[in-house]
Length: 124
Image 1 (cartoon, rainbow, N blue to C red):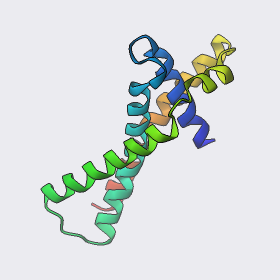
Image 2 (image 1 turned 90 degrees about the vertical axis):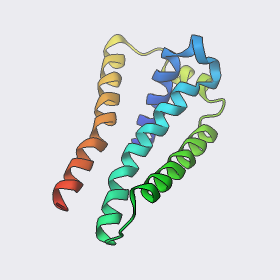
Image 3 (image 1 turned 135 degrees about the horizontal axis):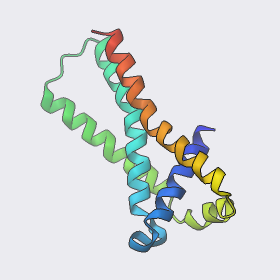
Image 4 (image 1 turned 180 degrees about the horizontal axis):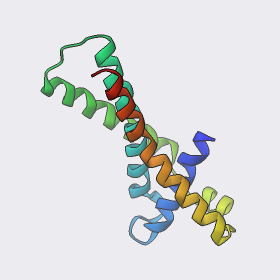
């Protein structure tokens, strides 16, 4: 299910920006990478708190930057030349299915923020 949400988010974003990005779908890859990073960030905070690491802000930013780039490159590899495959899969969606899909993407995008809030609340 989670993988399908990533794929659907990729497809919808790529479709929305197809005229500018083409089949390469840079904006969609960036969007999915950002969502994955948002899911990673609470885990990062949790690990820092649990392990009681005393990282300076600079080191923390460097670590997060490398992880963000790593996620981006993995996402780019995963979705390379996949736009038309996903378009064929979801081209015949009804308006209701599209609306439901868009709502799921919004929830999918906001849920890591809720997770981050919960993690930070637990370790005040």
